Image (cartoon, rainbow, N blue to C red):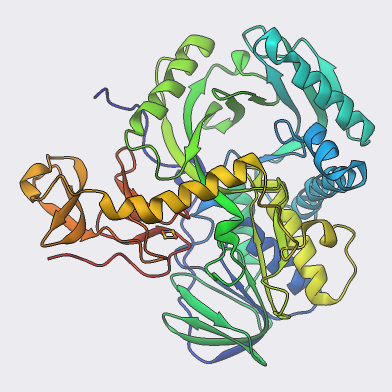
Length: 503
Ligand code: FES
């Protein structure tokens, strides 16, 4: 297997300090508890604290180390191709609200950067969705027409600063990009004080709606009138969001590039082999991020190939010969293209969620903070109805049926996995395999020194069988996207329990 280039770390995380907030102290009461210190949670916390509420943000690991720390950090309302589809599926009024709300989220980020004077490499940029080939051009033209109809800052262009020709592109002006962790670490610092808190290293296991709500953590119970859960996919299963969205992984490689050759703007292609491109300041130069190669979580084992294809693209299209970083990310894709932002279920009045950002999380998570803070403050919000998390979700589209069938298949088919292997001796160095040992399904990894790390292959969320991810050396659940280290520790929810160790 060819080695993947670059340090296996997110540039955003590698270039900023780790937060050092204390873990939760038992017996605390606040107005609003917020589970998850990513961009949605920290935006909500900031807006609520500014409005006079006391808040407590509870993070299972460290601030902005999850999905927010692994994004491309494009702050844009141009979401590849969406507006022509939205007009067709939901009508012009709802499509307009979608565009308007994502534009408002860009301005919310800009406003916080300005008011708080956040040094986070924030810059205004144009965003482009481009067609590589003439066959894709009609989709671009339809998107331009739809976006202009909705009043968005769109135009059709044939020329860009990319070093290769394109067939055509949608261009949105006055969008933005930033260093997401510089932004979030600053917001995080403003939370503690005057009755508000931020706790690192505290996992929330469940939330019971009561008066007040009881937030059960691994370190005791926090009480709050209202609770916001922003954990990518909610850790609470009652809202059935795991059946209304599916988990998707994507990959990024990053290379230092001659500033004179760096493209100006943020770009994304279309089609199965799309590429996502942007630059960011790096030491005294520029880092080019190349993203893409997304796939449903838990369905690809040889994930090194995904990175290698991105490297190839960098070499061919930009003449890059070495890479500084590589990392991957995961997000929940909503079946009806809209995120879910609002109450957990129709019978919950004090527990709120935000999920289903469909790989465009910078604006949608900011928007979640705006909407959820308004709902809790009793203010009207023009977009709350569109994104209502309890809305009837059509489970009838071709995609949603396929994805739900996939989950169903894993429930049944998973029971048969791994029957062909029965001994740890079958696992080579650096390899992960599913085994059946004494009738139990075991997920076994042999490290480079030859030691076996073995855990039960049954996902502690809802019982599917995990799959090996070779580039990240993780066990990934194909059902709802929980991910675990080779020792069974949680890397990504919705699971709140570790995998069971096997001796
Ligand atoms: Fe739900 Fe694994 S994430 S069963």
